[in-house]
Length: 332
Ligand code: SF4
Image 1 (cartoon, rainbow, N blue to C red):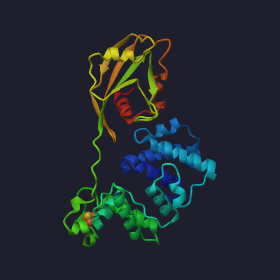
Image 2 (cartoon, rainbow, N blue to C red):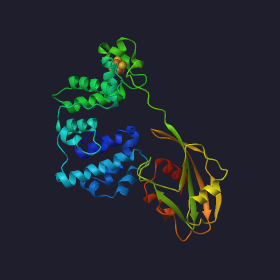
Image 3 (cartoon, protein in one colour):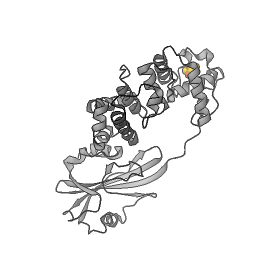
Image 4 (cartoon, rainbow, N blue to C red):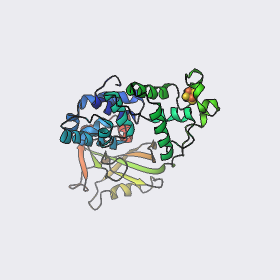
């Protein structure tokens, strides 16, 4: 995908690759580009269509931002991507790295593209003592990256730096003995390769327990849409209860029927409880269970915001990766 010079394709590829390895991200990229081959098709798609193609990648705000930026490009710029760093960085969700990558790869603009790979290389090469996840360290890395940049061919230079970090100066056990820069490398020369890059440890993720209730009646089930201020913003899910302390099977039937309040709940029978599934997000560790139940018949009215769909329609609604994986393993 890096063999293209189409700024739209590079933009999509860079956003997808921010969060995944190339072999995992490639099918998503191909699928996304097939569904939305240009900025016009992305701008005119519904949010659900875009999130569906993103399903499983996580970080759904990136997909939403891609679409907001696509709409801006179509409505305000006549469908033309900005052709320089300043214009690109003004797009929703486009950060310094992505703007520099597109500007240098597509337009030859002399700006250094600094991703995690490049930061690590520079931190080791120059022995940067400031944490690279704090602004003083970032500034130092950016300044050094700018000094190193080959201004005659910034696109090739940036690509080479990214590839060098991904293949030689890797996070664990870098290939220092074969490295052509070892004679100039502060970390290697001082025997402290394992101490660079310096990073401030991230906060420990918070534990959350979520039980999803898969209630089925005559080939239909219920889903709801999550709010906009929580994890998995605006994605769909089965009716669920969430807790900051472990949930227990004791009192579960009362709790699930209370989800229907103030309406009268249907008669429910328990069919199966999945094992606990641990799911790691950046700031949360989720412990989930899926509770399978059968309803004798649906209540005349459903709680506000609940949607009744056939099981065959489940694929039409973007859901969190945790639910998607469970549904795949369960073969709905
Ligand atoms: S010598 Fe080792 S740590 Fe230094 S740049 Fe080369 S691979 Fe990276």
